Image 1 (cartoon, chains in turn blue, yellow):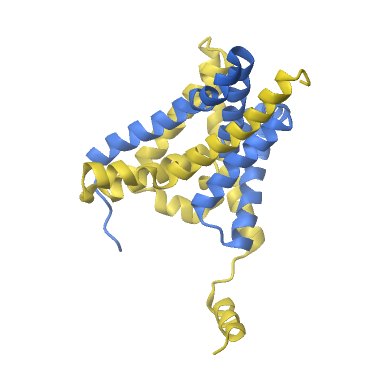
Image 2 (cartoon, rainbow over the protein chains, first blue to last red):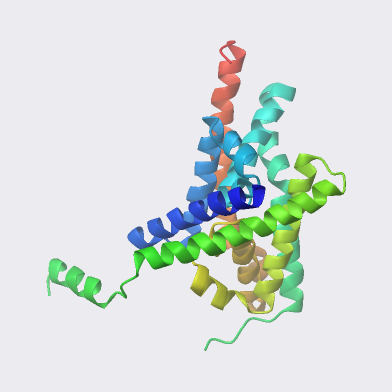
Length: 118
Length: 148
């Protein structure tokens, strides 16, 4: 059942963004920034957590889930440590995603060569 | 040729996209990636991990798979089919980081790989931090005056 919910919610987010891309011709970079900001806003409004509870990976795997976890990190750090938490929570919550992307990509750049333009 | 005519011309030569078909492709492929994520999550959970830890490992594995696909040059056909279905999940983020790093290898370690690896990741991280900081500040103020 969880698989079906993950499929439907995750698929729906991707499908809606596809429509947005077809209509507006926004570049992938802008789409990703938009998704992260939307995820944060949805986290602030308290509507993303129910979605994560409902759809699991369907909500955490899309980039808006990355934004949501950023916000959860900031909020948690503020609750624990007060003002300084505003500067701490975002990076600590997103550290694994960012470090893993950078590190694995760096290693890949040592191994693989750029493709030839066809 | 005035502006209006030019826009009509651009409109005319831009390939028409079939909205429903591209929606369906993105829906199915994005859904499949999320199901793969759910499989990984369930497996890590069954190994006795807590919710957050299982999520972190899921992210890690998805990024690893995605970077390998980029490295072996298999992403082109996938994105052509999936569109936003591959871009929106964390796989799209990892792909953009890896493809920039590999692409600019020739320009050297520091100004090639070093700067370009942040080509797409940079804006995403920056605006993620700025936005969450902004809301965090409001949250902190509200908390200080006892409203939340």
